[in-house]
Each structure stands twice: as C-alpha cells, then as structure tokens.
Picture (cartoon, helix red, strand yellow):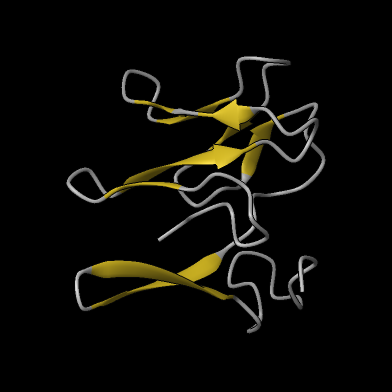
Length: 95
C-alpha cells in the first residue's frame, strides 16, 4: 500500500480501489490517481508515477515515499517505513 503523509501532510486512503492520493516529490502538489491512465498524475508539472510510486515521467526526481498502514479498532494507522525500499533495494530516503 502506498500512502503519503507520515510527516503530517494530508493523507488520503481509498480502500475499495487499493489506491491512494499522494504528494509529488517535485513541488509538493497533491497527485491523484488517474484510472484512465492507470497511474498517479501530478497536475502541477506533469510528473507521473506508476502504482508502486515509481517515477515514469519527470520532472519529479524521486519516487513516492512508502509507509506501512495498519487497521486498529477501525482506525487506519500509518507507521514509518524503515526497511529497505523494495523498489530500489536501498535504505529509505525519508527516514
């Protein structure tokens, strides 16, 4: 599950569709999921991310940050992702 907002940014989670809205790493614009294009599309400068948050078109230089999401007593709880980023094989840059 991808999510943005672990540092207090607005966080949106759409459980039914297994999609989230994210915040672009280029200038912080909210990046909605686009069903027709099957990717996250930044309305500010055109950056595009696939369903794993990988940049498929810039100008954004970095992939979207990851967090763990758990449900506890009906509430969604976000926990920092501290493990290796499975997309890059590197330590997360957002620690």
